[in-house]
Length: 187
Image (cartoon, rainbow, N blue to C red; front, side, top):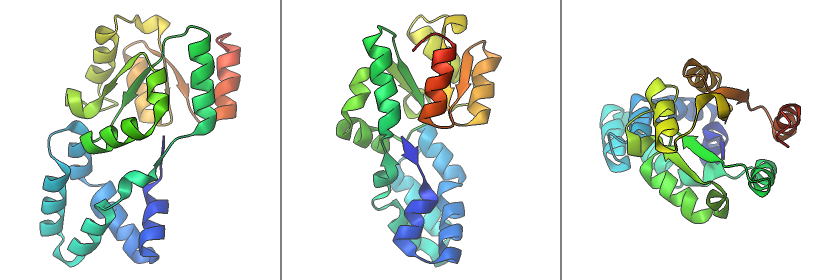
């Protein structure tokens, strides 16, 4: 899924200074990480952030209103996911996600059915790149780290997986991913 909060905020506010401020206050806040970890709800996050940043309280509320729409499927990578499934390769998701956002995208997007399973941060109260979330994935699905490949677009998450012995591909775009999977003789 594409997650581009700045693009979303530019469309919503169309004011560069306000965009940067709300990007920092909301999407780069500790509360955002707490949402991913599942330790607070969206309602609680909005309340805390609005009370802490009174001058921006309406903009904060507005930023939360409709933000799920920035979670856009990447069709080229869905095609790769389908190819992996067609070859009999089990795929699993490992994602940092808020509860309501995850429920929204899984209801809205059929491609989640292509995965054999997965781990989502809010349920586990863990975040990538913490070692424990990778271990949880391996344990839950009885996977061997040396036979597992994590594909992720964030370098810190790649490094976290490598610490527990998981092979990795640093995702840049679908063409690069396809080339790397071909190199590994997977596709």
